[in-house]
Image 1 (cartoon, each protein chain N blue to C red):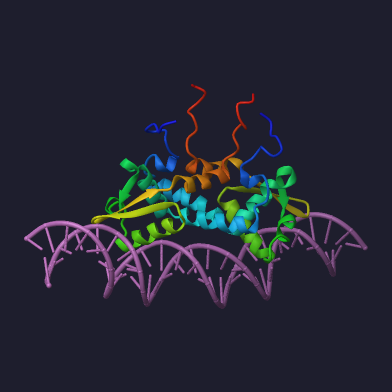
Image 2 (image 1 turned 30 degrees about the horizontal axis):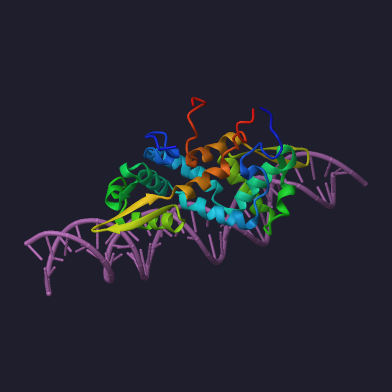
Length: 116
Length: 116
DNA sequence: GCCCTACTTAGACGAACTTCTATCTGAGGA
DNA sequence: TCCTCAGATAGAAGTTCGTCTAAGTAGGGC
């Protein structure tokens, strides 16, 4: 398949990002640009039932509970995860739409539709 | 389409990231988690011919040349762009495979093939 | 050879980030 | 009510990051 102007590349390589878009996307990327937060996101998303309580997460790291709490807050503030307290425990889950936004930026466009 | 275990989600939500993978990916993400570098990457990728010289990039920012040079170095060290001096000017281009790695992490798996 | 332009390197400084300890809130059990 | 456990918040310490100025390297023209 040859490159067709306008459909060849990942969105980031199709046209220059505006200053505003760049700032917004950089904030989202910064939230995941940390090994601990990347693992937290991955552990939450792959946990049975699609959600995990903090107690499921803390033991995997050699970090104190406040530190884990801080990283979860960064992810939640970025809109990448949601949370809810149920009784004694607080549960976290991934917000797939927001995670997908990151993917879209860098993923080469697939064939436009089933036109061929 | 219902979620099928093992094919439902973006790779990051399919199974927990190893400590090593998380560290490597976080380093890659950190390289793009900055508004200036995101715009540089976008300007380079969308420039006619697929490459841009530093002189094409500097004027778009209210930053000094050494600062732009620093950000380009971060992107190049991460393997996201390549560079070459040709005469007076230094040209930069995107390395699509490395950019695509970022996309793969967060993009939900497409249908496995044309099986349905 | 000399100078000008294009870009990079070196070093410094303030802001932001990651982690900690100490403290606080909120739920459940005796 | 009081104690304990789960988790969050506050504030401090050390580190990393983004930016600058000053100086260095490399190519091209006179």
